[in-house]
Amino acid sequence: MPPTSSSPRLLDLSAPTALVTGANQGIGWAVARLLAAHGARVAINYPDDEHYPEQLATLGDGSLALKADIGSVEQIRNMFSELSEASDKLDILVNNAGIFPRSAALELDEDTWD
Image (cartoon, rainbow, N blue to C red):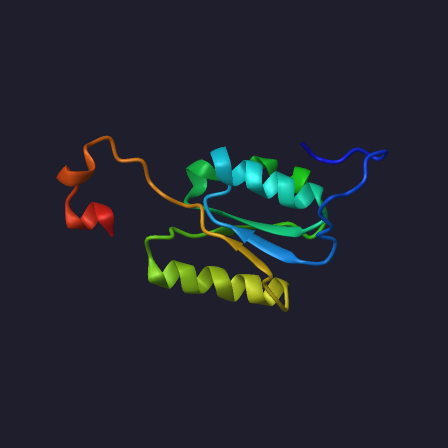
């Protein structure tokens, strides 16, 4: 729960820059909102235009949306290049992106694991 104007901040993130991968929904979105509520400048990663984070404006000034498929090394490099153009540092990295295959773990092929 974000702090209210009358409650003390238990966590002051008024300067750090954070990147949350897979932050357009679910746990990643909740983490991004919490970091922003405590003062961090948040960059959120999303995988494709279908998942574009329309909620970006709620994160505050300086927030950034970075489109990249975390399964692609080239797209990851481009994402970090874009982030470095917008910020001179990265203080917090939340590696949240993932997939949810609907099969037993022992039945997954190597491409799915990768």
